[in-house]
Length: 182
Image (tube, helix red, strand yellow):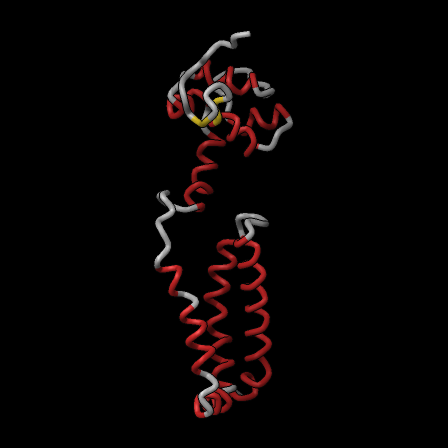
């Protein structure tokens, strides 16, 4: 029964999960697609190990023959050597990772401007003005960025960026309410 299962499903399962791992890996490399790709890639690559082991067991004789003919060693050395440069990369200069930003977004989206403004070193009125100056409809500092985005017909991510970017200082979170000078 195990041999039948191995012969029937070992290679097809390996192929299927390898395709998923490869496609999601390419999408992550080029920053395409939704944030769900990251956990899909990580978890299903771990699941790939099970059919890979089945595939190895099924093809064990062939693998041993590759080793005897010494044709297995060069590809393995190349594969492992390809990993070495990644251990010597200069640090990227940032703490955390993209997942940290994805975890912070819901907090920013659902916090009233009165709570968000102090994080940006300004008062709620300054944040209201910042958003209004970028075309957002804001009734009060008690609104959330999610509510403001809906009322303004914009994606909530754009509202978060608008709140974080100070159009007068050229970067996020600098200064408070500054009147326009014309």
